[in-house]
Image 1 (cartoon, helix red, strand yellow):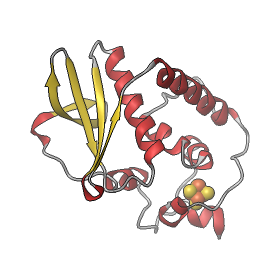
Image 2 (spheres, protein in one colour):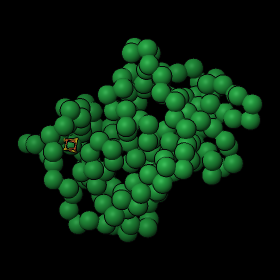
Image 3 (cartoon, helix red, strand yellow):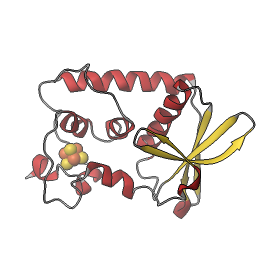
Image 4 (cartoon, protein in one colour):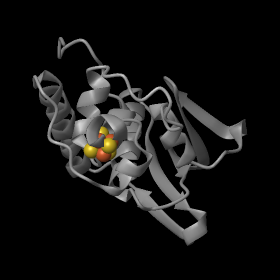
Length: 169
Ligand code: SF4
């Protein structure tokens, strides 16, 4: 594939921090198991997110973020998650969206909300996070240019993964 011809998305970032093999398979358009109930890669992420009040949301491409509140000249955007199991992925994905907002001239900070766990995680787009996102984005581009995917490693995510037959059959 031409590594210059795709835009790194928040979904790539999310999976990059869980399973780089899955990022490679997605980027190389390897067909997921058509019969798998979890076939739609977006579905898993969607299921990790509660249905939300759509009245106050901001749209970034196909991503919708809730506007939690406006604080002075800063917007607070949030994502409500069912579980903090994939916290690093969720944090980096939200940081990626904050960066996208920043690039559109919108100052925002993020909140990950885990109501079942009564937890809230503030995500501020620091210089360190921006640097980490730049590193992850470059790494995703390098990964895409690899002729073969990284080796499969058994992780909790495999249970719900559309590629589980491909990796483990
Ligand atoms: S089945 Fe597991 S190893 Fe294979 S792509 Fe999915 S999460 Fe990664």
